[in-house]
Amino acid sequence: MGWSQALSVGVESIDADHRLLFALMEQLDGAIEGNEEASVVGSVLLSLAAYTDYHFAREERVMAACGYPGLASHKELHDGLRAGVMAACGRFESDPDAVDLGELQAFLRDWLTRHILDEDMKLKPVFRANAPRVAAIGEAPLVDLDGIEADALNEELEWRI
Ligand SMILES: [Fe+2]
Ligand SMILES: [Fe+2]
Image (cartoon, rainbow, N blue to C red):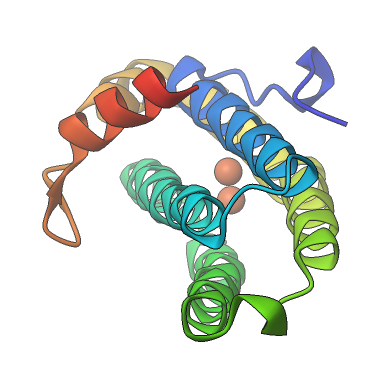
């Protein structure tokens, strides 16, 4: 299952991030099914990890701007996935055969779908109540992401998919 209107949280910048994350997962599917070299799969995995981090940072910034009381617990869920994805990237880099890519792929897709439906969706009324601020903050570029200029990352990812 990919992105559909049922997953919309009503904010274009955040919906666009979610769509891009699903698109990167499709790309990962393609790389796995096409038996691409480990370096190709690894680079898709790294893009997915980087964009996941970028998206979470955007969502957390918007939640903070809305004074959302559930920010800390929501961020904990994000941090859990951030750590899991980075660990998977690290394992894959040191030994590609040590990672069950099909399992990882299924886990990521399931996690993202459930997280959007169960957690991000709680934000929909909060976002609606703070619409002008959310639109402005959601669309402002994030300045820096692990040394990568976020706009450049965006352009690169848009080019790739
Ligand atoms: Fe989230
Ligand atoms: Fe999200």
